Length: 209
Image (cartoon, one colour):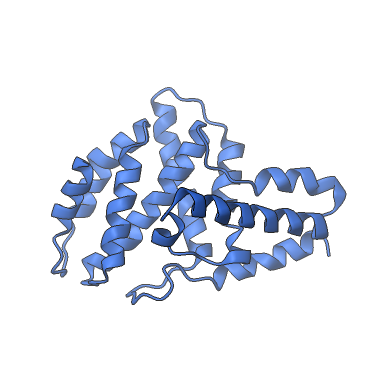
């Protein structure tokens, strides 16, 4: 019981694999994904600050480090399935939030309950921190898919993941998105590739949508 139970539960994130059921050259866990999202987000937030934005860093670190905690209970649901309809996405989110709330009620001491409800909530919203989380989360999808395509993985799901994540990122109005699209993405696309898939063409098509 208590916070020890929460700390022990974090091990589960190391055993949940992303993109289940598909061949991958590199296997990524939810724990590794969460760590990378934090790294992306802090750099994206630095870019925003350099452009005059005010960042609530405590909120940013809380929501980025905990954004996938609910997958302990429901696993990693494939992105195309999760986003196949707004109704399904809403239902999945309700189930996830309900299970997190039940976990907090059962295991977290009363004096810390409000803190955990706040930290483990859905962090993607219209605040600048919530938008940075959205960008960072999608950036990791871009990098995971790109790495597979670059190595010659012809699984269609990675093409779809790469394209959809880029489309989502480019439609978020932040200075860090401009920097990613204008400076970081070209460096990525220009890397050497052994793939038969034309990554540059897919990138251009996604950015033109």
